[in-house]
Length: 99
Length: 288
Image 1 (tube, chains in turn purple, yellow):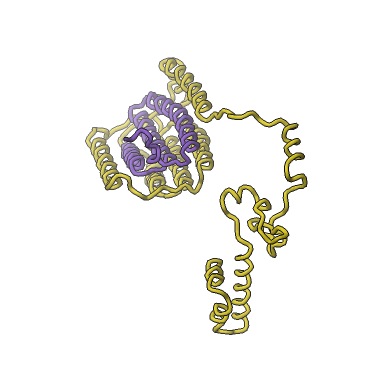
Image 2 (cartoon, rainbow over the protein chains, first blue to last red):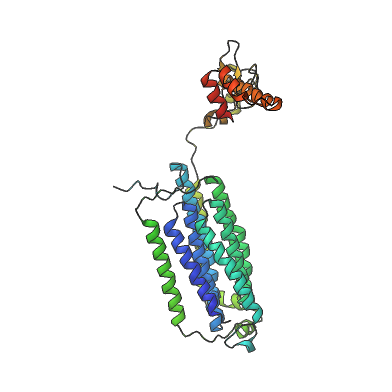
């Protein structure tokens, strides 16, 4: 098996996550799909690191993890405060600025 | 994983592991998208992330594999589960489409995107790979190699990441903080309210004089009217109070039906229905 299969898997997971973001309405599940996409990117980065024989890809994956952690904290705080004010976690309900 | 294995293929064991765990990862990802309840989605996503951690380990990224388990499945997914708990476990997605045909369009976009990505990877010339053996061995190991890079080449990115984390922490605190709009009651005020209010003794228990003492059945006042005070405040707010008068009729109906079944009376239902008023019969059916 060639490690390029890991890249195919990463692409598949990324596509699944992307369609999940487009299809789902629950803000938490949308957020989970974003996490899935980030994880797929990380898998691709780690595989590239192995293919090219240097550790830079792993460093970038590490920074992605840190940024993802920060993003999750802020995003979930936004979802919680949105739920407090609107009593719903659906992304369709936050449409105050719609004409 | 050693430098000599730098060729065009990995070991058979890794291939078997990839095909089994890769299937698990794809199934987990699909169920993250497809399952209705947010809790189930979160658990499937946690499974996918654990599989990805195994893949990192197989790819020679030992540090990242462990960090993936500790940070992603340990911290981030638990944070997700906490928020699901706060926002409501039963908050299932609404199945109503706000934009017509949006779901199919989205699925088409996702599929097309996936096909494009996979075709792009297929076209790239990636037939050989180097392996991490030499890179890991250069500084004595994977973690040492990563540390060497982080604290030399990527040191500014690392420092800025620290600032980012601080900002995120402060942001989360600001976003979820709620100011008290009124002053908190002091202990003295609470005791005065209690003594000078209407109810000096503890509140009456539910179901007093009501022939039924379930918590959601209000007790009866001496004149026979139900008193809502006897039911817990939470149940009152949710509107989950049962009516006593209907309850006793439903009990009677159930008793008649059971005794009719025991005695082998086939027309027990008809007898009971004939004996009671239509509203009571309806009510007992609802109770069933």
